[in-house]
Image 1 (cartoon, rainbow, N blue to C red):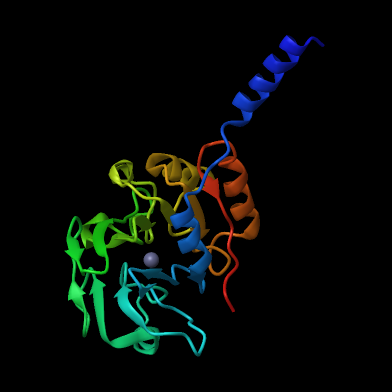
Image 2 (tube, rainbow, N blue to C red):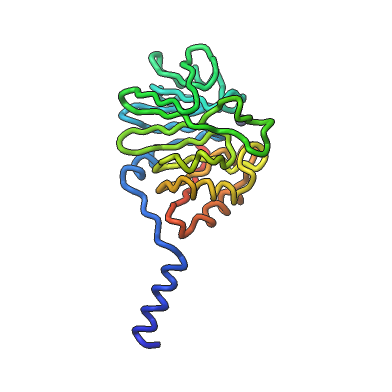
Length: 234
Ligand SMILES: [Zn+2]
């Protein structure tokens, strides 16, 4: 093969496989400190503080969170015992429903806490509407701090509003029973948002399997979004 033809073939191969995803250092730094405890239960740093989303089945001995975000009222997302365990005495607590000690947020609301800015975005089912009806006003959150926007989608299908969400790191369910209709739908939701990094959560406990997570990662290969699988922290 001539050098020219070899170069052409190599270029074609590179185009077919897409560009390698490049995760900015600030996003990598955050991802390395992200902990996942199953379902939507994650903690990560923001502006020098700790954020906990949907604390659930938390192990003992964790640090205290300065911000607790609850996406909706199902038992695997709103667990008062786990909130009690992780919330610092002065923690800000946000939820899209009335709960003791919580400030209620509405879809579209933006809350500036100084160390980070939180936006409540819609999370609902389009098909399996008995689980998370849009009329409940339940939410996902975009948390912006240290130049990084983290989008925790909450329990949702691929809703049209996702196309307007900007995020560097997206945490989403793989579902099939209560959330996304399929792994392919989760992949399309990621393509709507175009984060640098996507980490599937809300699998491996009640719905969604490791095989689903692996299929999700494979489907995003060459998309420009890096998909990374995490293990549930014991
Ligand atoms: Zn739910």
